[in-house]
Image 1 (cartoon, one colour):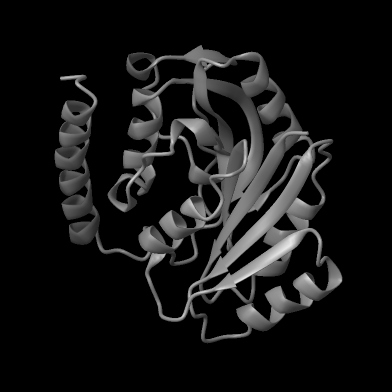
Image 2 (image 1 turned 30 degrees about the vertical axis):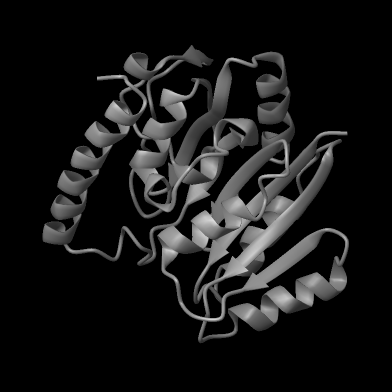
Length: 231
């Protein structure tokens, strides 16, 4: 049976983590599905909430608590490396949530039928903002055909395509570029996750910090393409 793990990366998400976990527990999936929560030394009640879920679902939920705060990039990278024995990985930040109970089954099935695809993604609802819709039809896309950024909560990734990933490859847009460099993407024009911008790693940055991050990301993506002999 296929092994699928949904990674939740969390830090001080006590107001939102229950909704996130419940949205993943409610998935209708026929495969061997686990939830791996990685808590980056939360100082609020997040860890206690997660521990209660582990007690309630000991065969379903795994909680990893870091010994020191690693930051979102390294926290996510460690979670990936600890779960590469799976066939597929899904992802959700602790303040976001999934809003379609069939999301995971649908994406895994599509990836199983299309071995050339390294990942699948879909449309995402953005809370506190007008609905932002990617104007793409449901189909397979190659690198140059998809010019938008899929939200991290929408991605399901084939593990065999990311065995050599590094921690610097994991930030949002860089990760998408990495995945496109090792395969195609199956995109689904349906809203199946919700992004809740409440001061996370990106939404908490100033305009100047965001501009600097974008510039550095573009420079890294150029290096990434050279690494894969795509430039």
